[in-house]
Image 1 (tube, helix red, strand yellow):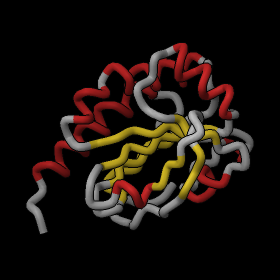
Image 2 (cartoon, helix red, strand yellow):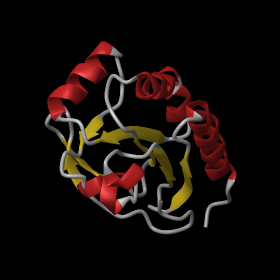
Image 3 (cartoon, one colour):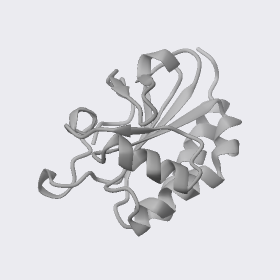
Length: 155
């Protein structure tokens, strides 16, 4: 896992809908919640995605966007996003390029770890946490970090 306080590596990826996601496009404009998860349609991953979905409006209040990353295909991501009405994009990372860049490899590198990063508008990682089984801990930690970012004095 990458460390809090370090610059978030920039990357470009094609989203499940064919659009391009560039982390640098959000610099100076939006905070980014970048979360990695093992597999579409599994119980834990569905619960996590739906929790982010159900709290999406609150995250938007903190100038945040969300993007989910797993090694599933674009087709799988599209079906997952549509079935669960996710208002945020999913990044198919079948070659594990972003997973490796963000050190989100799970057990022996076979699966993606459940890792979440909160990246501020300056492109700095303000929080990084991994809870493979305590899925419910991700959302409160994300919201706490976004509140901290908002309260921080402008430099």
